[in-house]
Length: 355
Image (cartoon, rainbow, N blue to C red; front, side, top):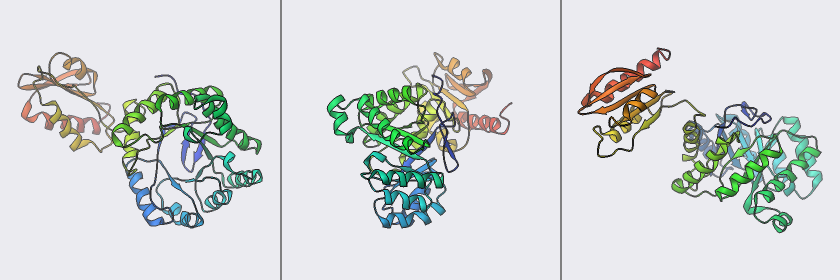
C-alpha cells in the first residue's frame, strides 16, 4: 500500500479528519430530520454499527429547530447537509452542528457566503464541499464534459470562494456513480491540494452491487494513499453502511479491531467443513475487539503455510486439524472439538496478546 498522502487536519467535534489520523466512517440518516427523536434513534443505531460521524439533511426551519436536541443527545458528531440557503446553514451552526456539507458556489448572494463563513469561524465548524458528477456547472460541462477535470475544477471553484473569505477548515469530496470517474477525479484532486478528502461512490445502488462499487472505488483510492474519511452510500436503510465501510478498512489493514479470518474457498481435497467452522467462529467472536488473524484451511496444500502465517490457524489433515499459533505447531485436534479449541486459544491470546 502507498504511504498516505499528507493532508491538513480538520476536527469534526472530537473526530480528527486528515493529517494521518485514523480514517473515519460516515453515514447519513434517511429520517425526517424535523422528527428529531426518530433521527436520534437512527443516529444511535448507526453509531452502534460503527459510524464515527452522521450527516442529516436540513431543508427547512423545522429541521433547524430539531438540531439542538439531536446534537445534544447524539453519541457522534452531526453534520448538517445544506443546499442553496445561507440562513439554514447559519441556523444549523447556531444550533450546534459540528460540520456543514455545503457548496458555497450554490449560494446566489455572495455576501451570504461571507455570513456563513463568519459563523463557521466563530463556532469552529469545518465545511465539506461535495462535488457530484450529476450536478456540475454548465460551463465546465461545456468545456470538459463529464470528466475528472470538470469535477476537480468544480471543487476548486468552491474551495477558492471559501479561501477568499480566509477560511481553510475544508474537506472535499468528489463523487460519481461511475467508479472509474470517481477514482480518477479524486486522484487528480489529490495532486493539486492538501485538503482532506471524503471518499465515496454516490448513487452506488443497493447492498449487493453498491457494496462492490464502493469497495472497488474507495479501496482503490485508499491503496493509493488517498482518503481521510469515507461513506459507503447504499439505497434504502443506511444501517448497513457503517459496517460496509469498516469492512473495507479492515480488508486493507487500516482497522485492526476484529478477527481477520483467512479461509480457503475449498475444493475436493478439503477434509474440514471450512464454511461451517468460519460461520461458528464469526457467530461466537465476530463482534468482539479481537485484532488477530485466524486461518482456517481445509487441506495440506496451502493450509500449513497460511496457518503458520496467521496469529492462530488450523489446517486440515484427514479427520483432524493441525493447530498452529504464531508459526508454531501446537497440536493435532479432532474435527469435533476444533472450533472449541480454536476459540479457547483465541481467548488466551486476548488475555495475553504478547504470549
